[in-house]
Image 1 (cartoon, rainbow, N blue to C red):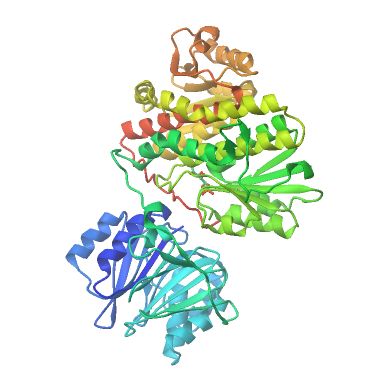
Image 2 (cartoon, rainbow, N blue to C red):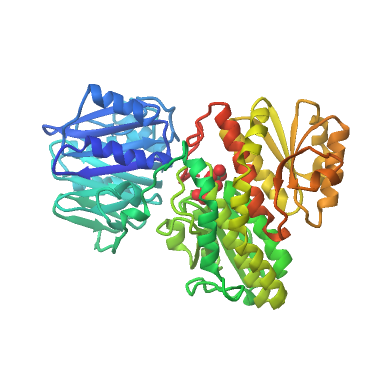
Length: 608
Ligand code: F6R
């Protein structure tokens, strides 16, 4: 959840540390800090809030050290204050940390009994103190870290810097990602390859339990049993990782507009455009005819993609599907018996609850399939089969292009499953594939109507509460619309299955409550229309998203806020996702909110 960078450089590293932190800000941004050795002395500069505050501090107090560590934080233990910002340090050691030390209270009590004084509310400080006490007893830095790591419980990544040690960094990984970058006469540690991209394209990922000792000329990796091990070094070209906003004012806008391209690329990866059939890449080897059950687990927007996939797999392949948010799945101990397949969906591939669910399913003996955007992520590496989404790096905190790429992959898989399970005829497969292949060009048309959405957003920005309604495949999209709106604009929004309205939420309807209705022309269109009329009859303000005739048929001529193309009902979620994303984007923008970095959120949720 936080971002870590560490550099053993040939010249002053502070600027490079901050630049790397900028690329890691998607992991958290409520405070940041760096530490370097100034003539052998550990010296820190930290600041509450965004990285620009840290840069301002560094302008006042420049650091000149050639070795250093940096951190951008998403608070777990302790408020996001400067005192709680990383690095945490004693006179002998400084540490940056991502994740949670689960037994920190126990460790803190033990340290307190030995007379330790705590200056922060963080779990990280115990790590600094444990290492410091070992150093005080005369252990070397390597021995001190080696002694401390087995005492820590939880999922974390750590990087250490030591007073007087100009040619030493130590990193450790237990459940949270940490990569080593190999440079020329320089070496690095970082939370991901994106942070390291400007420095080097030679990257090795630590495995769980690994710890690494770095100098400028050598890197030694040890496993949890302190045996020296080799981890493969991959060449990861910077061009595949670096991201910038291009001509857009926000990453989110850029990523929304990239969808025709990245969804097209993803679709092309799974279908044979020439024959109009699904052709899974060789590595996506799943026998859907051999299974009788699918269990899906994911979080947030990826979970909503999972709900849509449930409808697809059940309708197109007659495959029974159960779905959970991953934080429930991992603890409810679902009996995974019979011939099942577990499916995990994640943009980052690092979401702690999704990863734990994957491990649960594998331990129960079910094969794990992951639909993942970050190909080098832990979820991708631990799954039996990876079906990649080719969305490219998603930097905006709110998931947009990753979501529609997930939908593209999931629909391709469901069509394939339908075919091999004998549910879909060749003709039906072709119709569905044609509809999927046609999505990118329809997306371009929808994006061209952005000004319609902007107008609605100006009105929506004045609302205190908003209801989102949808049925069938649009139900999960209503949930997604409400999530997007609340996370970006902080307007309270609820997504409901349209048929549920009269079972409670209808009581909320008055003139002040905008009700956004997703009304594609599908088999439940008539039912949705009746729900729209129920809202209209009670004076509700309806914002209809449907095709050109939807408003007329709903008795609301002229009230369609966003006119959508008529498409095959199966691909509706891929297209209707766009006005849903644009509505939340423009509402937040009109309200002056920080669209790319909404408060309290982080892009990669590596804590549970
Ligand atoms: C919302 C959003 C989150 C993520 C969720 C899962 O816009 O982005 O709800 O979808 O945190 O993240 P991943 O897909 O990385 O597992």
